[in-house]
Image 1: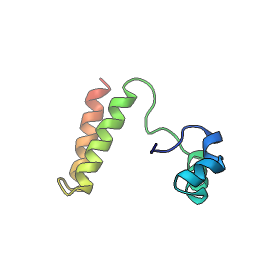
Image 2: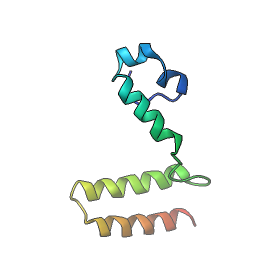
Image 3: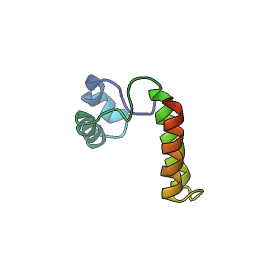
Image 4: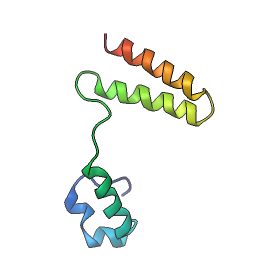
Length: 82
């Protein structure tokens, strides 16, 4: 139905490979997830992830310079952690 599977059994399922993006895609996702770590954990983790994502998106979209986006993200994260 879209998005990345959340269970290894789905990533390894040949039926999913046929209906989805193919074996290569799912084995690559699995390799990436093996060493992945959350961007933030603990109190306010979801808010922090949202802040960083919003600011990085602004930089990629050309709405802010990368430095301005990172500076704004750092300020917003500091406020959220108070």
